[in-house]
Length: 231
Image (cartoon, rainbow, N blue to C red):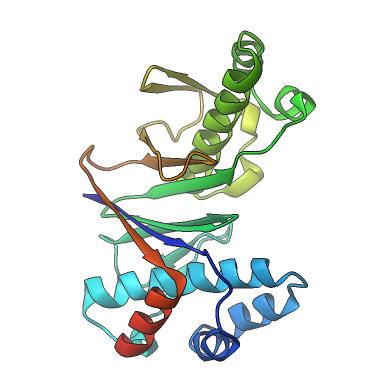
């Protein structure tokens, strides 16, 4: 079953909690987080890692220090020696997302803001771009983010990042039906979208069953203190 864990960053984390949580992630991740100039970027990245670790500790009945991650050649992380547990993290604005399943999964969340249609013309397939032009005003903006998050979730599930051109496949989303047209080898997948916030789009691409669980929403202080209790 696909499960979705979310944290809403409605307020800035206390510095003492931030430092405590930072000490519990890998040295490589610590260095990356410390390079951020913007506090919000650092907080989102840290909470993404902590959220995944909290889920893993709960699911696997292990402590944080027992968690070991490996990466594929494109940098996608996996839990070592756990072929039946897959996860993917995304964050944007006030939201941090962790999706899990027993099979390969990808997720993307994006804050909805005005767009430059040149982005769609450059990165979307011709069919997707034409579908977008057929829509007007607010509907066009919403559909742009439907396509963008669905496409991002697809390439994150596949695990090869932007080595897969965004225009090498086409997403068709219409009245809740989401289909993919692709010549890529990665095609045995299905999609789901969640309405967590009217100002955001959230999409999931999964390769396992079609059963989706409920969405779990936490506040940043809550997930931080739960992690400390379990680590």
